[in-house]
Amino acid sequence: MSVLQKIKFPTAHTVLFIIAAVVSLLTWIIPAGEYDRLSYDLDTDTFIKTSKGNSITLEATQQTLDDLTIQIPIEKFRDGAISRAISIPNTYQKLKGQPQGFVGFIQAPLKGIMQSADIILLVLIIGGLISIVNATKAFEAGIAWLAQKLKGREFILIIMVTSLIALGGTTFGLEEETIAFYPILIPIFLAAKYDALACIASIYIGSSIGTLASTINPFSTIIASDAAGINWTEGLNGRLIMLVLGLIICIAYIIRYAQRVKKKPEQSLIYDQKEEIEGLFSGISSTATTRLTTKLKLVLFVFSNCFLVMVYGVSQLGWWFLEMTSVFLAGALLIGIITRLNEKQFVNEFMSGAKDLLGVAFIIGIARGITVLMEDGQVSDTLLYYASELTSGMHKGLFINVTLMLYSGLTFFIPSSSGMAVLTMPIMSPLADSVGIGREIMVNAYQYGVGLFKFINPTGIILASLALVNVGYDKWLKFVWPLVLILGILSMVILTISVYL
Image (cartoon, rainbow, N blue to C red):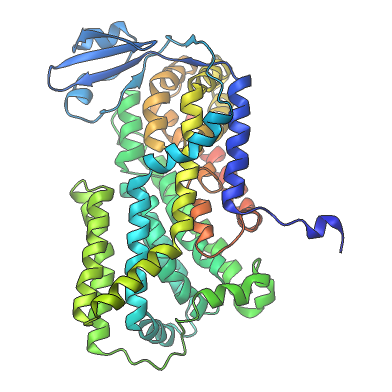
């Protein structure tokens, strides 16, 4: 065996630390700088303009926005559509460098863990809930029943999972919440004779294509449209076309791989981990003899309704991580009561499940730490400034495609779609005017660019998702890069056609 064959791809934690080290180095190379920011104070009905850490109060009028060349209706601030500070065009200025040395590098993941405490707590509570349900044997009985019902038509599972999660992604930004689905759906996919990668693809790609082609997602489409000074319905037809075509391509891509694995298991990209992954879910089998009793049906009903309540709360009631976590904790307690688990067994099972997802929780925190490094190093605005300078004055066909690629690149440094929108749209959307295209096309380019990179973004949640079943990032890249290439070409075609219509 050669030396290269002996070298193994590092774990997700190590990958993130390597990226953090590179970002720390970049803060020594990329000049620090920032745009002035403008925020709205609802209590005093005033604007607060911040420049180099100094703040001044301005009248909250349309004239103030016009004077700052911000082409956003004042109502967007007053009705809460824009609640975060936005960048002010033509105000970029270099600052004294804030390079992040060894201390910043060490502290960044710790800061990231503290800033990600809400989602980390959600993950740990979900781990506890899943362990409680496992202890009841409800999963085992339910999966055996489902495997029997889908026998010969297992591909329907891929269509359903990918489509439903894409629907959540395009409407209310279902993304981080999908972490909850992996431990449940992976045993079902294994029972269908697929591999864990097919399950990860159905969930993660479903979320990613939904986010890429967001139609009414308030965390990307509506915020970006508001920050660009247009109605969110503008450009909707293009996003719908992208959603339908992209979803069809994604489903076909996943089914093609999954069916190949079903016929020849050795075709699986993670075939060398087959026994290891099946061992992780050894307590859940499609050939189980546990009967799906009324009590176990009630357990599964409570468990599944936790997710339905979560989706309803996020999409309709404005819930966030505290409320979502509360739902899963309440579900665990209710299932414990239904099945009459004694106190000691309940605590032991719950803590065991939380411990199983502790590594995933750390990955989420470390990934957030990379963003902390960039914020502390003050390099994100510099990259935005050079991106806007690069595209200024281009021919519109070239402009929109370069903008697409720039947004993909910026997503590494600004992984939050809402953060990207409020920081970049006030700067980038006026450039659309200068080349003679609609601002709605710029919003779509932002969405497609951000969405494309999310398929592989190591500072997003893909590493946490892969860590749930110990699948390497290299295996995921090998699986997904042809799909990203296809979707990239599709995005470029749709954007190019749109600027000439």
